[in-house]
Image 1 (cartoon, rainbow, N blue to C red):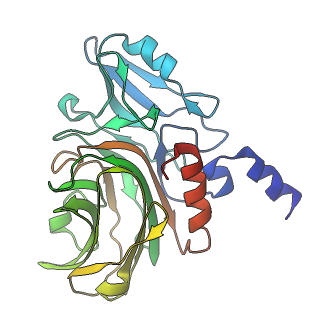
Image 2 (cartoon, rainbow, N blue to C red; image 1 turned 180 degrees about the vertical axis):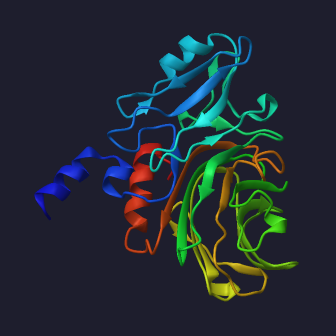
Length: 284
């Protein structure tokens, strides 16, 4: 192992060890040079404040100073990889991070609380059209597995645009679906339960449904069920939405702590990426 690699690993931060060319969002520091986690609006005064880190952790003391006994609503989650932030300008659709002066947490660490019609959307395109495969890693705390809830969507309107991807929960399953033509989908599902999860998803173009996506939950490979058969097509360049479809509907009602996207084949890095994430969050 080179001296340079040893120094990088000693930093212990995900994006210093496994850099990405796609967006990554979390409330903990992902790269040593990063200074901001999110921007939060005071529910009473409407004053917005940028919140950063204390060491590698979320600076909840600064959040408490800014919000006091009020509630804190997230207007921006800063991209710690390539500066493609996700935002929400509509007040009633902003996820909360502080509820009447109490920090929202999962596993003892800061989290965004989802609720009806609340979600975030990227300021620029999620540029994946040139990629033959992408990987997405999610840190979530699931509270409801029966209602349809979108965790991530790569389009302003999944039902209208070919190549769009949606990752969602419905009827006790986690599903990964790509629209391949009008009324046609590649769609697979795996069983899902409530609780804290690290969900890892691999999605490839030009594949039959049975092989177009793979899913790991808390480091364990899942057996998929084909829901709708097709052949996956090129990914669509469009906005990325987190915690809701189009940033406003079919909202995820659990807690959200991180989204990490990677381009290209990450098979050799998957375990390392999962380990870095889990070492911080202590999910399993």
